[in-house]
Each structure stands twice: as C-alpha cells, then as structure tokens.
Image 1: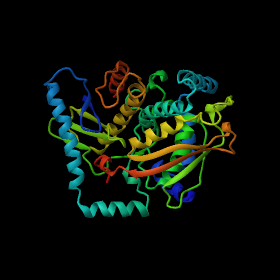
Image 2: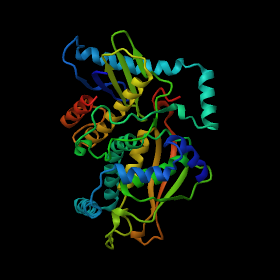
Image 3: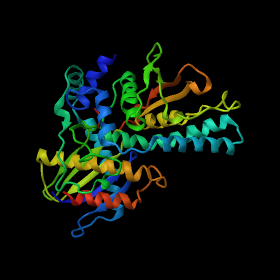
Image 4: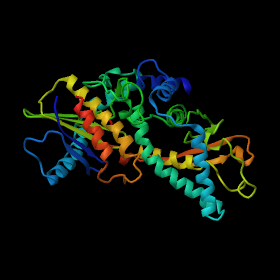
Length: 191
Length: 202
C-alpha cells in the first residue's frame, strides 16, 4: 500500500495539514485540497445521518448488554520495518506506539472510500480531529483498512507529540512543524 | 459503581483488563518519564515567580495558574487520547474513574481517590493523597489563606474535559498546604456540549 497523501482536518472542517508522499502524478491545488477537506467534513456528518435508525438503536442497546469486540480495530504490528531507533518515538515508549487493538471513535461516519484509482481512509478522534490517508491502491480489503487505521493512529500519536507539544503552534491553525514532517515521512516510509 | 465501570472498561481497554491495570501498563511501559524533583522544582519556581510578578496578589496568581493549566489541558488531551484510545465515557462515574486511574496515573503517577458525589451525580471530588507538585512546599503566612498552590491542575482538567465536549467547573476545596485534612479537587459537570460531539459517534 503506497500512501500518496496524508491530510489533517481540524474539528471545524478546515484543512490544517497536507502532505504528498509521491511526487509524480496529478496534483490538486491547495484550494482544491481545502474544498476536499470541507467536503469530507460534510460527508462524514451526512453518512452518520444516513445510518438507518433501526441499526443505530440495535447497536446502542447491543453494546449496553454485551461487550462488542467486533468494533475493535485489530493492532497491526510495527508496519513494515520495525523502528530501529527508539528516540524516534517521541514520548511514546515501547516496541511500537501501542500494542493492542483499540476501539474506533468513528462508528457511523465515513471511514473508507474506494474508487478504481485510489482508496481513502479516515480516522477521527474524540476531539473531532480527522486524519485522512489517500492510497494509490484501490482496495476494499478489511486488512488494508485496519492497517490504515493503525497508521493513522500512529500519525495521531506523532501529532500529539510534535504538534500539540510545540508551544509555538496555535491550536486549529495550519501545522508548520518540521519535526512532525520528518517523523510522519519516516512513518509512511516504513510501510 | 467500581464493578460497573470495570466491566465497561474491559470492553474498551482490550480483553480482561481493568482501567487500573490499563493505566498502570501505559505508565510503566509506554510513557517517557522525567525526574520528579526536576518537575516539582520547576513548578515551584513558576509559582514563586508568579507571586513576585503579581506582587503577591494571590487571586491573580490562582487565575494565572488556572489559565496556564487550561492551555496545557486543551493540548494534553490529544496526547492522552493518542496514548489510550479510550472510548467516550457513558457516565460521569466512568469519567471520574478514567481521570483518576488513567489520566493522573499516566501523567503524574498518582491515583487520586474519587468520592463525595453530589446527590444528582453531576459533581465529584478527587482526593490527592500525594501531590507531586507540592512535595517540598511550605506556604508562607500571607499565601496560606488565598493561594491554591496546585491550581494549574484545575485548569488542565477543565481544558481537557472541554475538548471532549464536557463543560466542567474544576476548583480546589481543600489543600493540606493550607492546613486542610486532605487535598480535595472538585469537578462539576455543567453540561455535555452535544452539538460539538463530532459526527460519526453513533
């Protein structure tokens, strides 16, 4: 799976970060990316409305009575080559950033879009932040989806370290942090 | 209550794990640590500098500490969520457990006692048996009546909870530094900001 682009969208739907990892191929202008971010924000909200009421209710009552491990995203071990240098992990220690399956915060919103040319994956946090990965491979494989979710959660860990802990970064504003750039590139490079 | 929240957390924090072991594990194995004395002394020098800067107007010092904490909290919540990936809490009871057993554990390596629930379950207290911020501290006479030495914690909690759409008031009720029996922080939930919960969560 080759990651073409990673986007970060803030909770009000503004694009705060965009980075291409594959230099070739058609590129969107920065304005088009802004439109894409706003559109995604809207589509996620619409998708969550589209979920049939009956499903929502059964899911709710179901989770109250029985624990639903099916909603957990499986942990995918260190993607590609393991991180050689632990100092690259920022404040997240251990072999990998995390080592357990984890629940998804985005249960009825849009998570995954596939066309013949590409796939797009969304990871939404509890604070409303969205991480988007665009892959050059078209896939509907469940494994690919969970790999992408793992990747994006790691991107979130990097964001927590190198963006939120940078005292000169203003929340909700575009991200201009070189450390975040380099570490994200490393993470994507390991794939 | 504790049994209830343990069963809920078991579903979130992986199989057969209580919130407590979950928090312990993250603190022990996955979090970078610094020297506790360095931390205590740094905080101490900040507070004493603020007292000088505000000419010992301790009300202003309290609110400045609170504001600093707020700015930390709105950022720190992302670290907490990235680290734990805990799901949204169903009840304030569960929130209180997460705050004491995960958040305080991971960031300060203490586990405050939760107690003193209000009748309608919208407010609770956190009792800090040990407070790493105030390890070597003795308040001077003039500060002992007005200064809430660890007020930064209130700001952190307030900021962090606000980012997960819970509008809370947080304040100190009691502090051993001021001669109290215990160090008690009060958390009161005003409302859950339903409009701001991101779309997609059910």
